[in-house]
Image 1 (spheres, rainbow, N blue to C red):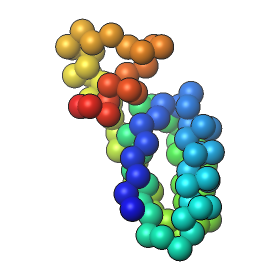
Image 2: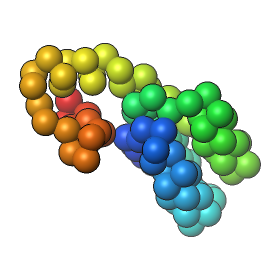
Image 3: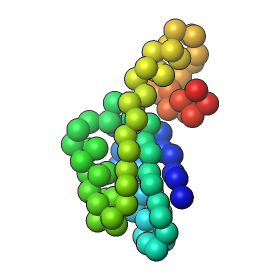
Image 4: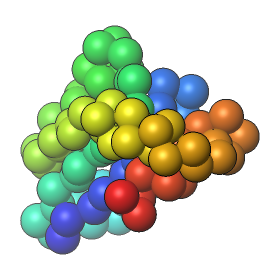
Length: 90
């Protein structure tokens, strides 16, 4: 199972809570988590990594800054100050 999250640093805690629930309910499944990172700090990335490590699951961070630049150049409006919703469609 491949799971994609799009998160910024403000939403990293909620992403972690979601990951805990997902991994706890799928302990026996093969799960890989991909996170489009919109400026998640190193500290928060380490916390998310430790969640996956404790369940022996893989996590991959994808730097979405290049997508954000394209969205800014297209004059797309943000949603509550973030492009995280729009990145899913990029």
